[in-house]
Length: 460
Image (cartoon, helix red, strand yellow):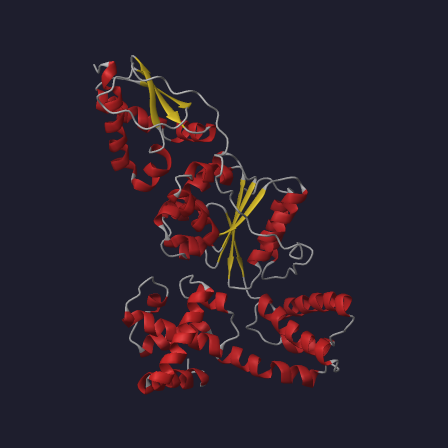
């Protein structure tokens, strides 16, 4: 039987036992912030900082705490989680009876804590402006049903597809509809989630981060594949999945691949995601491509008073490899030309404006560039996605980024995403570095020129 004076030491030992059993990530998030509050015989009170933390720990970790304390004390105990202000752990030599019980303070957000920021919603990206077709209609209808509250049975929606296929548009539209209904929608990119969580971790504000996150009625996370670079954030994301399931709230996720195809995703997270409504967005068929362009042409005519001929729209739609984003980009290019030059927008003019870009888009892709560059430098394709910074990998990766910018119409952020989720500044640095090396090193320039020639011949 433990004496009352020993309970603080027992709590310290129990914490260490739980850390070994749970792992550092879960322990740091939920157990480390707890404090020993008081003991009355075998009735133990453990203090949490906020009501949310108290409820979560009581619902998910109470039995583990009970077992750890019972094992370390050698007796049966009854554990209660209470709300108590944070204080340093009392040294093991101090008696529990001498230490005043922690005040039961219902705390709100800590003063001065950084608020969780959300993406700025785009008012133009609504369900009305989204053009559905065979490749995306299922995702469109599911997203609309969730956003408008038409179907309350959809608790987890996961949409995936290539870049520019409309995933972000659907998430934005859901958030706008939720806002109309007075619901709190929190829209985060995966990198935003990761950056803000790690920032809260460094500032010791993780409980506040969790409270802000779980206060949302609908949580929307874009580009999930970028989340998987951090063990801590994957662990926190699993907690979020579980919390939203327990609270019967909505979670909407977009990624470039299905859950089963995302690298470095833990089995429990993958299982959770696969249990939701998982829908793929594919390349639009020609009729949908034409419909997208006609919709954009109507908007342009209202805004500028200029009409884009239908044969020009048909010409743009002929590119089978175009995503909706590519189509809008091509349309904007010719429409801006017509607006600035005040010249009639004929089919010949459109062919001239888009000719080189269209050929380049058909000639090669980022995947082609990665494959050929990897073959040339005797690397694996996955090396371009990895965080490795060794010269053997980093220099070829820079070359592939340089060629991707030169030979495709992809933007710097899009190129960065294809190379392991790197940001646009990394791609820009790579392009500048390769260009400089070509000026300094004749042999290196020959390597780059050779790869450019191989890719321009559209070698499979």
